Image (tube, rainbow, N blue to C red):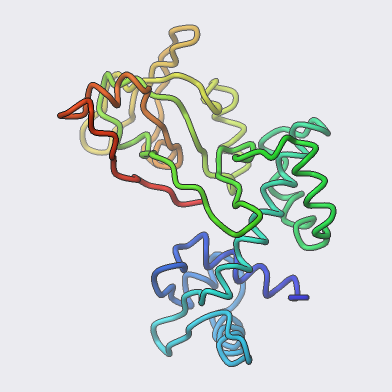
Length: 244
């Protein structure tokens, strides 16, 4: 059994891109609200074990080993299944489930995880649209892009929203910018000005700041994706931004 603290470190490294690149100790410290010295000590410990969970280099930080990646995805699966269970079964709002799941992810057993998954019909995304890792440790890849990068007048659906900011989730929910909402950008103001987004259901236009728009991901409508392809018989496409 890994301690709660170790689990938090592994999950944080994964969410920050530590699957493939070195993550600095300062960034990890800011993410976990601990001191850089504490981070250095923990990363050195995780790198020095008989089955290292991270690769650590002084002054560069750490990235996950294959073993560490597997553990991180297992923790993330627990977290996202718990979020969905709280949302769909117990009626928690999408702005309430993250903090609850942060606590419960450490204590559910593998048997309980399996039962939650079966009860929910083996779901593939959590209430915020983040992919749920599979039981065998694979992370589904989807074709997404940030709302802020969406070209104007391009129909799309909201597919994922960052889950760490409760106030932002509450704000977006109040605007109707929720999962699967059909939207398009009307106008992008210059000089870091707001972005005008049309919500198709109700045909309403809302202004979003760029910081908020960068936290929302979208998937293009199928017809739009096909029209954008130079050859409609070509079924290959780039993966896009799939960060969880």
